[in-house]
Image 1: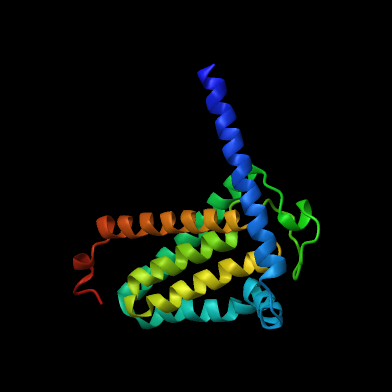
Image 2: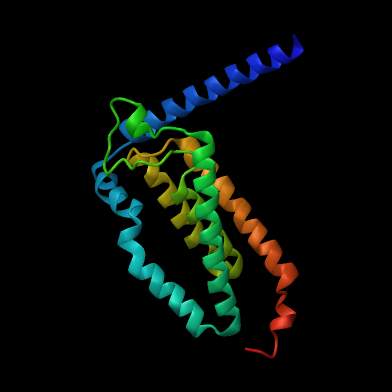
Length: 197
C-alpha cells in the first residue's frame, strides 16, 4: 500500500512538472517573442554558423598559449566527447519526444530534428565547455556564461526543446565540467607544469 502511494505521488508530481514545462515552453516560444529574436535565435542555435570560429579559437588556445593552453584544448575535446556520448545515452533512456513533434501550435524557426529531446545536447555541450573555460580564464567568465545562457535559451525559442530539456542539459554540463576540473586538479596539478612551458 505504501509503495503504491509513493508511486502515485511520484506520477502526479511528474505530470505536474511536465504540465508546467509545457506551459513555460509555450510562453517562451509563442508569447515572449519579438522580431529581433526571430532573426537572431535561429542563427545562434545553429552550430554550423560558428564552426570556423570554434575551430580557430581551439587552434589558437592549443598553439599560442604554451603547455597550459595545450592541456586546456585537449581537455575541452574530452569534455565535448563525454558530453555527446552521455546525452545520447540519456536520450535513448528517457525517449522524450521534441515539442515540435509532440505539440501543436509550435513556432518552429529551424528544422525540428529527429533525435529525442531530453537532455538537450546543445545545452550540455555549451555549459560543459563554457563553465570549464570560465574556470581557466576567469576574467572572461561573464562572457562565457552569457554565451551558454543564450545558446541554451535559443533552443526553446526556436521550438526544438522544452525548458526542462535545457535545464537538464545545463545541470549535466555543469557536472561534467566539475568532474573535468576536479580530475585536472588531481591528475595534472599546475605545479607539475612549471618549467615545461
